[in-house]
Length: 278
Ligand code: URA
Image (cartoon, rainbow, N blue to C red; front, side, top):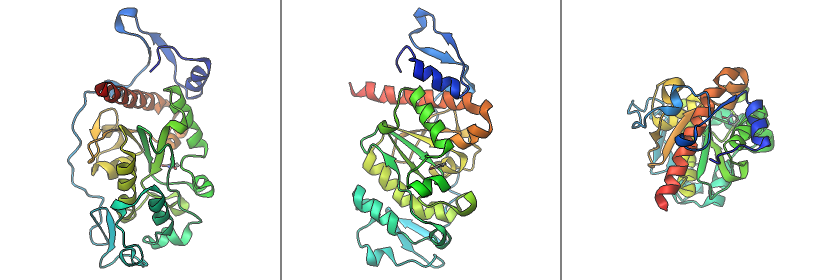
């Protein structure tokens, strides 16, 4: 992170309700601090090993990155017949098309106008993963475009990142009706798509926004508060940081400080990872 904030970054921090309150003394290194919660300074610790309670094995079985229909699975045009190539071998374009063609989750398919695949830089070091598209996102076919999306852009800008420098996706590629939480079987059915996005992108750091997304990716039932503020590892080995989703921050601005600490932690991981390449 650069050691001084420009006026726009300051503006964004203020917009987010983040008070820049302390400059480090010269001997503490450059940069600035914001009032951080416990989270930002937590020691890295291995991923939780709680059982993968979210996967609903009776309904959907995800095998080697491919989705196969099993006993009680919803009506589906049988991906393995119509789309013989496994998800795990698709390139970006074919994967996006497979997502658009997916009909695995009957309720989501019946209510959707379009899928929201993900957006951003396909060479990005940062991957941001949210829960599921909302109505605004479905309308535009892009993740995080509503008010929450604007806040996310502001937060990224404040740590020196433009939207064009990151890749953003969601656990679910369809908007759940009435903005309800994704069901476990929907998340399981969609997970091969996200796993393939991660494999294609090869990010250096993953920022996960929200409890549902974090629990799904970490196979954990722990609360968001206990998952945030520390370094986990995605099963691909990529360091992963959990934080509050921007929609929550709009409702609960006092948690912006914690989200800021999480972003700074993720930024530090990225800088360290780039440094270790040098
Ligand atoms: N919240 C999410 O989790 N994803 C979006 O795309 C928008 C809001």
